[in-house]
Structures are given as C-alpha cells and as structure tokens.
Image (cartoon, rainbow, N blue to C red; front, side):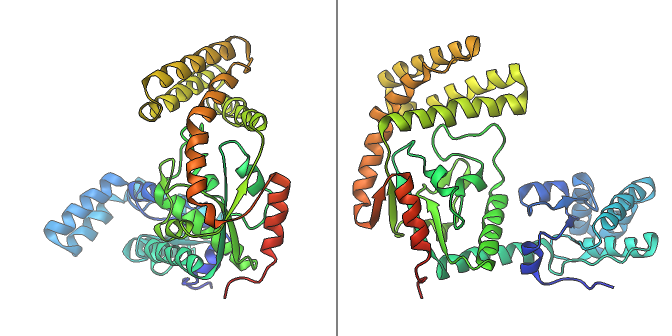
Length: 370
C-alpha cells in the first residue's frame, strides 16, 4: 500500500498525476500543470457549506456537505475519482490544506470503491509554499544573465537554442511587447509562478545553476514576474543582441503578422480567426496611443488598417512593413536606445545571434558563483 505523500519535490520532478478536490473557483485562481480538477463540491455547494460553518459550526457544515453530495451526485463523483485512480495508480489526491475534503474522498474511495489512494499531506497550500520557496532559493543561489536588444533582434530565437533558458514569455504565453498577446489566453498569475518554479526545479535537478533570460519589464502581458527575480534582473549582467534593421523588420513581420494570424486561424477558424487577428492588431496599436501621440498614432494605425484589409482580401502581407518600420524608428528604437545607455555598465558582451549564442554556451561552462 502506498502512503500519503510529503515529498513535494519528487511530485513535481516526476510530473506525478494528481487530482484536486478543491471547488472550481479555487482551482481557477491557481493550480499546478497537468493536475485534474475533480472537486468534492461544486462552487454553489461549497458556498452553502461555508455559510453553514460560519453560522452553525463544523458539525452542521459537515452534515450539510454529506446531504448535498449524496445519491446520484455522490455516485457520479465517486466514479470519476475511481476512474482517475485506476488510470493513474501512481497518483495522489489533495485539497486545499490536505484536510477534510481529501480525507472524505480518500475514505469514500476506500470504503465504497475498494481503492486505497494516497493524498498529499498539506495539500495545495503546502505545495504552493514549496514552489514559492523554490523560486526564492534559485534567485539566491544561482547565476543569471539577461539577453537584451532592440525590438525584433530575435532574442527569443536565441534563447530557444539554449538548454539553460528561463523562458518568461513562454510561461506567460505572451511576447512581452505591446503587440505580444497570443491567440490563446494567458495563465492565471499563480499558474505562471508555479510553472516558472517547476521549470527552475527541473533544470536545477539536471545540474543547471546558471540561467539565461530575456531582459523584461516587471509585467509580461498580464503576468507579473516574481518580485525577487525582477529585483535581481535590475542588477544581472547583460548580453546585447544586435541585428540589421531589415532583418528586424522581417522577423517582426514573421512573428507578429504571418505566424500570429495563422495562430488565430488555427484556434478560431478561418473567418473568425482573421477577423479577431485584425481586431487584436488594431487594439494593440490603440493601447500605445498616448505614448505615440495623436498624429503618429493616426498615421501608423491607418497604414496598419490598410495592410490588414489587403491581407484579408489577398493574403499579402507586404504593406505591414510600413507600420512596422514606423514603429521601430519612431517609437521602439529610441526607447530601447535610452535603456541600453542606462544599462551600459552591465553589458558584458554584444554581437549577432551566432556570436551571442556561442558566448552564452561558453559562459554556462564557467564555474558558478559561490
């Protein structure tokens, strides 16, 4: 018989299957990758039991819970738990603190389905605390280096060729810029933090103690970089990636027009995808209206609107180069040039994609900071 678990590290390193007994509203606020939500109570039932607990105490609340989850409702949920347990004999179940809800499910599985299935002691709260500490420890114990560069130099492309990358934009499902929103939703903040911590945990388990990440702001779309990591990013050494203006324009055209429109079509279908893509691009331009100023916004958004209309009719994307070039020369490049000057003392290397990649690979072989 397998025992209840407190080895949170191994749970995450091995991607152990787990079922979460919390109500859907709790699960939506934050969960762990790959975990399945099979709640003991739905949101309405949980709310009723919570109100009863406050007004009449624990015994009355437990009695109400058993009344609400009984008969066919209980049987359907029991079958779902049993199916998960049978499909994942190596897995575990948990609730918020590893307390009453997970113990009730554990008991019903044992007594009514004949399944001995262990739970995670301490539940979600203990595992979440473990992951927060994992990130904090990595910031304190590991080396970090940032990759910076003007918009469109291909920082993400370089990072994806390295094994010691900490991909903030990947975990946030956002490209980090004003136009960086993807066709699919970003994760909840807690999910973003959990994924980041598990990535750090797994890479450190493979002996990686130096991490490369893109020079980001505190906010990546709607996700906030953990404070300790962001504070470190204000001091970490910087490697500056360089590329020609023409290459940058083509890369932005590829990523933010060709690939993103294809992503929208893949997610939403041909007609809706193309429409939603156009709406997203126009909204992205509108989001930086104040920073662009009225005249510049009107001029660039008109070029964008015309480019989108041509793209909708014929699939041609050539006109998009107009607003991309305008944004780079009039908005992004001056802003990034100012930032580069402010960070000049921290830049330890500058070069093109091949040079930066090779430099970072060689750097990773150095002795880590003690």
